Amino acid sequence: MVSVTEIVPPLVEALSGRRPSLLPVWFMRQAGRSLPEYRTTRAGVGMLESCLNPELAAEITLQPVRRHQVDAAIFFSDIMVPLRLAGVGVDIAPGVGPVLDDPVKSPADVRDLVAHDLGDTSMIRDAIRLITAELASTPSGDASWTPVIGFAGAPFTLAAYLVEGRPSRDHLAARALMHSHPTSWDALMSWCARISGQFLAAQVDAGVSAVQLFDSWAGSLREDDYVAHVAPYSRAVLDAVPGVPKIHFGTGTGHLLPAMRDAGADVVGVDYRTPLDEANTILGGRTPLQGNIDPAMLAAGWKPLTRHARDVVQRGYAAPGHVVNLGHGVPPTTDPDVLTRLVEFVHGLPATA
Ligand code: CP3
Image (cartoon, rainbow, N blue to C red):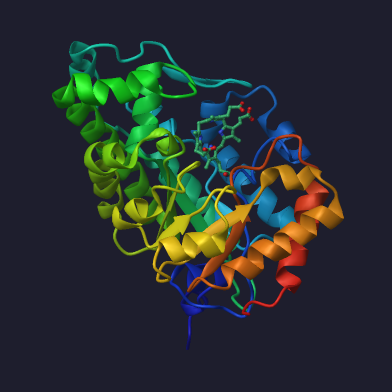
């Protein structure tokens, strides 16, 4: 007898460079403030606290799957969760983002930081198990189950927060440190790679079907800096998770796509600035792509949105596999019904040219 888990869902097919009969679609930040049920579940609970509560994290992860019939769940967590688990003073300030109690300013601060270990990840594993149990009976396409995607922050994006102490535009302090104190930079990036790698490995161990590494701020880097001072550490994270497809995503990274693939990714996530046919050419036509509907189009009206989504899908036909997604996260102001209709629309488009 074929067990249900042997039937490969469309998401995993596409991530493996094949063309399933259904175009798989999910949205970065599909769980979050755009959903009224999320706002209700989160009421009075801090962001990181909700990530560390397995029942809450599982419930929030499942909300967009139930509502939109997307082809994947993305684990509700945050790239800052491993820092909190490691005992680093970090919080997520509403409307601001991650804020560090004590930003890393000196080589001595780096030495203090890297003495921290990841610690207990049981709540992460418990949450994933609750999620996969429910998704085992939630169909996607022909498959009788929907996969869950795990994720972590890439070392550079984590280091940028650790050094800057809060969201910044150009990540100047982080980019200066890599050249002013190369030994400290190596220690800091190696530590970020270790805890992100362990955070991802815990998710894979508990049953996620794919992972995504978010290097949201890599776009601020020149290619030579990325290749020499960042990519080796991202590779260490990706190498720590064998056995599942790996997606590598950043914003403003049109100039870094081959380097991000060559860091050990199976699939490249493309932000909304680079058309997918161009991305495919840059990558030599051999890498499955994820993306890249412009999040701004979600609020542009149905006609312009569907014209744009159709164009994204058509450009994506050039690639060996395509997972439809946004070019960055769902804006909190998005009308959730637009997302539900967009999933239906994408599912109605031909899966191949
Ligand atoms: O649905 C999903 O995509 C899964 C959950 C997810 C969250 N954060 C939940 C979240 C994922 C994949 C992330 C990744 C993340 N976190 C990244 C990389 C992706 C990206 O957006 O570039 C980054 C840079 C962070 C750090 C972070 N956490 C930021 C910048 C913010 C936004 C601050 C704000 O209020 O706008 C957060 C908070 C956060 N993470 C929210 C969610 C749903 C909003 C929390 C809330 O409800 O107020």
